Length: 398
Image 1 (cartoon, rainbow, N blue to C red):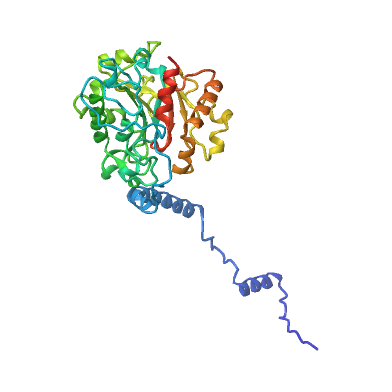
Image 2: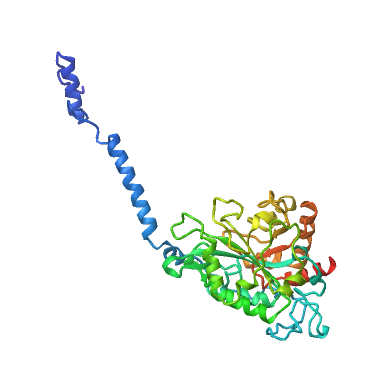
């Protein structure tokens, strides 16, 4: 037989309850409150928020993150730019007879004839009536030590190969150099804007018939609260003697953009667009410097995020009008790159081929309702054949 000992129950039920709670250790004494009251909880939450803000401001996140970003080795089996041409890449020249560039259909053999962006016929077109080979995140290259670069070679080399429009992201890197061109994270790579402007101006002085377009994405200030002021960007440009004199300012009351020949004659051969900041139209906000045009007031573009080739080549979606569709639509941008968090050179080698670009441009032209494709924007500009395609396309659309 199993004997069980039972504690004798008190005659008072309340005494039994107190004894039970005392044995369990869970009894509450009179006047004893809970350990987590609302004032304590609110105070704890406020301390967490303050600690989070201080951590964000004081910890050098760019340096910590940059140490873990991967780098690429340039693959050796990618096709070269313009693989269908044997033309060399000559150094620019101050000679006003317009030295032969690899993509150009005119040059020294044309005597003193004017040549604009590769073709004599371009001179008689308005600047938004021709196509421009466009470099996406043009500042980001392996040559300038960017991690996860968008290109192998720098913007200056792309100028010599026929690229005439460039998207550039401006960052506030604080004590790491102030305003720099970077792709979100300063520690992952940055370029001095003034250096790039000096080199761009030198190229234009040596190639008198060329017009370039700069599309700036304005980042946030160092604390991430406000866009970088446009005036700060103009101040850098103004530090390069003669640079701002070459900027064309379009009057918003004018319906049509000027002819390229007129811009060459005036030596106003730099067109500036910007976005992610003031649209220049709101009188209560920062006025834009002279010659700074808000991109999506004037231009419309396709979507810009494509995770794979299949989505890029699904034309109904990839050619749909996206940002800027409620603007004037004087310009049309075709974003032609795949991004899986970062640019992938092997994919660029496929989608940058002439036949792939030609097919998508044709489809986007139809889907957009006949908008002329001005900007075909690619990653890894040095593979594929975009400049040759652009010259051919402009020649066919005389």
